[in-house]
Amino acid sequence: MYGQESHTPLGQRGPAVWFRDRAGAWTAADRWPHLLEGWRKVQAYVALTKPRILLMLLFTALCAMLLAAKGWPGTRLTLGTLAGLALSSAGGAAFNMWYDRDIDAVMSRTRHRPLPAGQVSPAGALALSLVLLGASVLVLASWVNGLAALLSAAGYVYYALVYTVWLKRRTPQNIVIGGGAGAFPPLVGWAAVTGQLSLGAVWLFLIIFFWTPPHFWALALFKNADYVRAGVPMMPVVRGERAARFQSLIHAGLLLAVSATLPLVAPVGPLYLGISTVAGLAFLYSVYRMYREPDGRYLWARRTFACSLGYLPVVFLAVAASGM
Image (cartoon, rainbow, N blue to C red; front, side, top):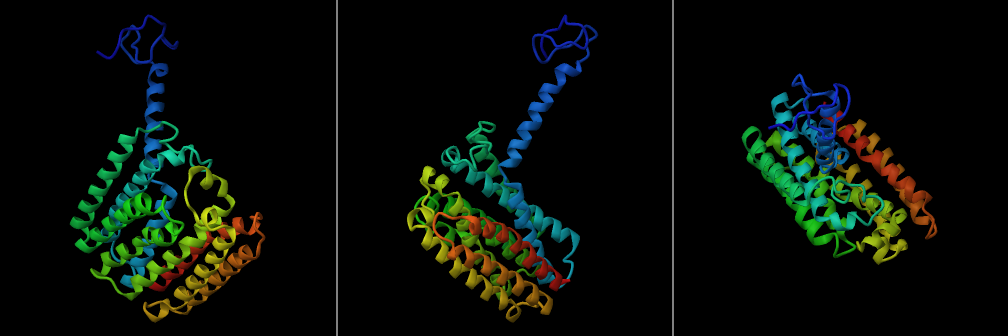
């Protein structure tokens, strides 16, 4: 049974949602609440996958594929790789939200996420994560190759277990060591094309690895109260703002060095070198200004965070252009 019949005239809402009129047809007023509720549930599950971060991860993988293939690697291979990587990355994000739902609830930046907001059940989030991981391994192993599947699964494990479960709540070096989690996509993309890893793939990994600490520490500086309230031992919370600013400067310098030496290990040309050098110097300057900023002042921390968001797309676009 779909529900009792409504004696409400057509076009008016009855006392319940799923009702038929006397002619046996569903009314628009009865149908839309359920459709809207279903759509909101879909949106909540999509939000668990952190779509904006997911797009950046896929972009870096695609750029690595273009460089490794020295051109277009083929539509089937590209779609299979990106689909499999998207599944594992989305699964890792869902696991992170499942595990961190307690601290997300007390941070202003994250309290509106699906789990703290009660839009998704914890069991549903964990089930989604595991299903996505399994689907990723299946897609990559059958459509691409075993190494790509292994690296994609390793990225999931690194983010979910090494970073989220082990490091995040235990050490101010959480971002330094955990930065490798977001650096796996270029490895997956490179392995998908070549069936192996080379120094070029490792250098792309290192670019993201050294970019991650100044990116997150800049955010942690002007969101410091959030991390204190949640009890997350970020560098500015445990070691102080001065240490976080100095460590950010060190990592920005290492980032410039790694990006500038990519031509030694990968087939990138003068265009890449010029773009990456300008972008690296601009980012280093921003981090230096953040370092010089007095504690309690966050103008350049905010600017550095914004600059970091532009740095990776620019540099990896230059990588892709070298491949084409």
